[in-house]
Every structure is written in structure tokens, then in C-alpha cells.
Length: 596
Image (cartoon, rainbow, N blue to C red):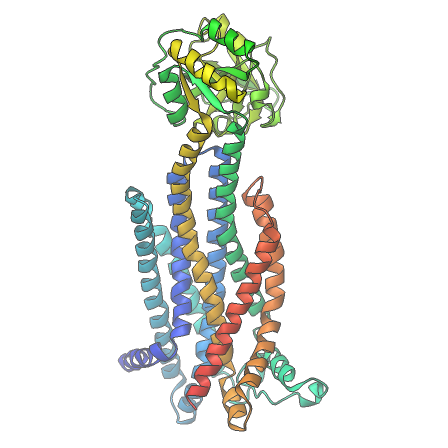
């Protein structure tokens, strides 16, 4: 046993540098899985409560899809790498069998070698994934989220890949040891079979294409290679475009919500609230609007006289409580069940006169009746407070009645946690008589100076909404770019996979390439031969990944995609993946020729 371990370690050290591409593939797999798993907890902690529910869910779905893709890739890469290593060990195993080595000794030696490869790659990959995440977090000055890097989940999932490595190795050793003639075995048309077979089948095909087609058919890995290329290309599409698309959609929807307004007019404290409101709070909120003041009616009349187009709203933050209901059980009609948990949060209240302020963002339900106790709420409030908005009611601090929810809006203001209530109800409860905030839609250039003067006389502040939105978006981009950087690393890793695939594809045919080079075949012809093999292996997977990537991004990860020419951009990325694989072919062929 000690002898097998010793020889396994010697063989590992000897082959680590010569077969670095194979080991790098395994290490990159563990890095990919480690980063993907931890990205779920990191993005959840960063975005929870800081963005709308819709955007938060988009990032969560994206991180889960990325983790699943990374895991499948790691499984396929592990299986392929084990078989590629065995292809280089075939001659050693045949030699050991021919000189009389016991099957048990060969089994132990090869098994220990592969366990060393798997465990060392696992440790290095897991360690590097944590280091990369910490570096990115500190670069964006968010090191406090480092505690979201969970070691145990990554350890368990990556450990299961090591176990898979062992099982594949075990089965491969038994298969090879049971073969009678290792050098000429044709089981599964594996890649130690001579390239110069099947000549009768390919007489009408040009030599370079004939070589590529033969290499493709006798590889024995057609199906697994297709899935590998398909998954790695899909991953590159999703890693690159999903985060960009989510960020652009978020910024676009935030800009669109306030893009129709130019100026905000209010008192200083209300203006500060509009600019810095951060969403919801589970704790008691110190309501700074203690005075039940309203906008100056003379000031509003002045706006009307100057034909200024505007909306009046009332901004405040109030405690909102869920009122649960008891209904008949759908299974047992004689029993009743309770819907709701009596939750409560301090949420931004927006009193409105004109329902067009939210109507174009109504995504579910119907608009409320102003004469009744009906309101609309944001998607975030619905998910946070209610089990079934069609059955339950809400109670709002400062208002006597309970309110029925008639619809859900897509909201970005106050991080997506808002409730829209008719101004009439606020007046009835003496919270306001005329709102506390004016949003100006359009105004003539010669009138704006008069508005500034009139606002100053009334002790109001005039704020440029475009500047407020740009300031908010600038802060959001810092967080979005943090996530983009994390998945940018994963994208780069997927690109290196294509390079490694091209190099390994050449190494699988190294004996035939050496022979062809020795009989005078030019380097350009050798590249073309491998290009044909590469094209057969990659093009089907790239085409399917283009279609799947487009569907996933547009219809599953982001509800509304606004990235222009997305299909063209994805097709260009798939072509880039093809070129990078060909670069691997060039590097692989050059390395073989150098050694001759």
C-alpha cells in the first residue's frame, strides 16, 4: 500500500507540469462552483431590502441558474478529465500488466494517483474561490459582506464532485483492466484507436476533412463533448449578459418611472425624504412630518396661471399592518383556515390625486375606486406582507379604516416598498389637505425663473429630478458592478475552458499529428485537420446554447429585457467561443511540433 502511494505521488509531481491543462480544468471547475454557490448568499444580502422585489428575484434566479450550470459543468469536466488522463496512462497500464504486475497493485496505484489529483484540485479551487470573492468585495468597499462566504455548502458540494471523481476513476480502472489488448482495443471507438482506419468509408472526402471526421467519430466522447460545449457556451452567455441585462433593466425602469417629471417642489424635509428614502423598516419609525401641513394654495394657483403641468402627491412613511382573514377550507368545507400572519412594516405612503402616476406600472389586478377604501401596493410590499392580497386587508397608521388591495404595481421608489392611497382618504383623516410635494412634468423655460422666485418666497425647495435620479443610479451602479465583477470572473473562466478544450483536443490526437508531421505534412494542414474535428465537436453545442441563452435571459431571469440587439450580441459571443477554441488548436499543434 505504501509503495502504491509513493509511486502515485511521484507520478503526480512528474505529470503536474506536463499535463497542467488537465489539472487546470479541474481547479477551474472547483473555483466556478465555489464562487457560484457563495454568490447566492452575497447577492441576497446585498440586494435584500435595497432594491425592488422584482430586481432582487432576478438576481436570485440568475445566481441559482449559474450555480446549477457550474455544477453540471464540473461533473462533465471531471468525467472528461479522468478519461483524458487515462488515455495518457494506457501504455503505462499495459506495460505493468505485461511485466506481471498484480491487478490489485495497478488498481491501487492508479486510484491513489487520481485521488491525489481530485483532492489537491478541490483544495486549491475552494481556497482560490474564497480569495477571489474577498478581493472583489474589498475593491468595492463592501468587505463587511465577507461573512456571507459560506465554507460548508461549498465544501459539501465540491466534496461530492471529488466523490464523483473517485467513482469515475474506479469504473474506468476496472474497464481498462478487464480489456485483453489495451493497445488495439476498439471498445467505444476510443482515442487510442488508429486514425488511419475507415479509409474505405471516406475516400471521397478531402484529406483534412477526412482526418477531422475520423478523429471526431473515434473519440468515443461525442455525446459528452456536445453537452460540455453546450453547457460551457450557455454559461458564458448567461454569465456575461444576465447581470448586464438585469442592471440595465433596473436602471431603465427607475429612470422611466421619474423620467416624465422635471422638478420636485416641496419643503426641505420632504425633499430630503424623496432623495434619501431607503425603503422599509421593521422598527418604529420616527415620523418627522409632525405638522399636518399642506402646500400653499396660492403657490398652486400661481402654477395653474402659468400653465405648468404637474402632479400633487403626499409623501410619508407609516406603519402598515396586515389584517388576516378566516375563510372556509377548500379541502374540508366544515373547517376554516386563517390567511395571513398579522405582519407589519413601516412603509412609504404615496397619496395621489391623479391615478396616472402609477397606472402605467400596474402589473396585476385593477385600479382602485377612489370613493372606496381601496389601494394599490408595490410588488415588494405584496411579497413581504401578504399571503393573498385578494383576500386580506391592510391597516395604515393614522387612518381609521381598513383598506382592500386591488392591484400590484412595479415600483422602484423607496427601494420598491410603497403604497398608493387616494388623497381623498388622507384628507378625511386630516393628514393633509393638499399634499406636500409637487412633481412638475413640463414648464416653459421663461416660467422656471418665476417658479424659483415664488418657491423661495413660500419657503419651498426646487429640486431637479434628473439630478436626483442620476445620483441614485450612481449609487446603484456601484452595487450592480460588484455583482458584475463576480460573474465577470466566472465568464473569464468559461472562456479559458474553450482554450483548454482546443489544446486537449489536439493532445488526444498527438500521436497521429506527430506521425503526419514526420512524413512532411505542413503545419497549416495539421491545423485545418484539427479545425474540422473542432468544428464537428463545437458547432452543434454553440448553436443550441445561443437559443437557450436567449430564452433564459429574456423570459426567465429578467421579466422585461431592454438590452438592444441581444440576439446579435449572443451570436457574436458564441463566435468568439469558437475562435478561442481554435486558438487552443493552434497552441496545441505548435507545442507538439516544437517537441519534434
